Image 1 (cartoon, rainbow, N blue to C red):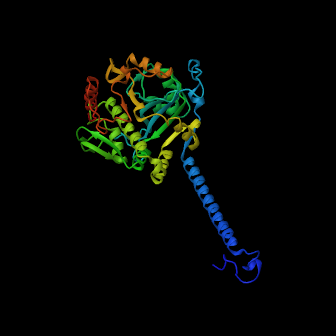
Image 2: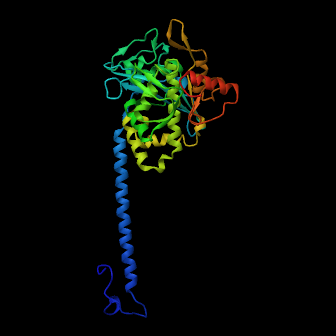
Image 3: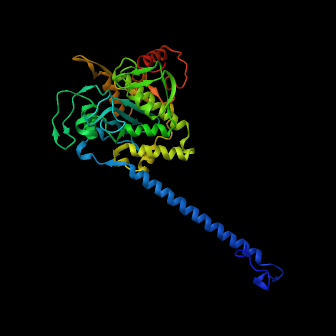
Length: 397
């Protein structure tokens, strides 16, 4: 204490009384205040350095790229002026599987490079009141426009091709060109999610809950899953979203429906668990997420991603709805599908930022009501039909 307390001997400043007052205690208070202030400054500096380090670390994980030249000019019809502050946002999300990467072997296939079995358009309305996730069947037979292959070599447009071949030959740029040409919906941003990193995101959340109507024993994909409601780890979750041989009718449509339910459940878990109140879980999830995505430069930093996320802040879980592009069986191949006439209505409404009609939302999944996970009574005929459809697609009622 001798370093902090003054000597009480001697006049004036040495502890004696001057004008009836002692000066020593004031110096004690001033000295302690300086120590506390200095300590707070040090803490602030350390905290600031930590935040700066974390920001730089996670920001460096991001893989951003400018594909504007490869994508080309979007049509003039898409340049509609929207009222301030901003218009609708359309994010094309593509799931990527590198068959040769550890943990990314899909359907037991290897040696065929990168593929995409999942394409979802995430549409955020201009008034920020609703969001739609629109899945596109990978087996859709479409007229793909000319684009560049993965080596930058021009590839002409075929008469028809399967939807996911665009990603196989030309990556995200070719898929985006294809999407714009077929839907006339502008793409504001794009994101490619690596399925191997997807596992880490699920584990960072402490698992995600799903419900299976019966057990899965798939000898083709080597996937075994128990029946009932379970909280799946990352590896189990990856098996679940890929499974299509022993759940439902074995089609890609059923798998797509289960992917929608899983994403909805994942969003429900992240938002309901209040991750911001759990710093360790949040940092773990952030590290996994930033390592797992390849995205455009328009959202190629944590600050930009945070700004985008901020625009979703007023949308409730029940307003995040997942639907599927209307389809019908391809007349020339029962193992493929083509878009139904109703698909034009869907894409026109998305392009014009209109609420989707009830007919297109029939059977949709939202992040508030997940089949078999969040219990809601089925009262009407439409709800009963939705429950039957869920069972047909390998989901609980």
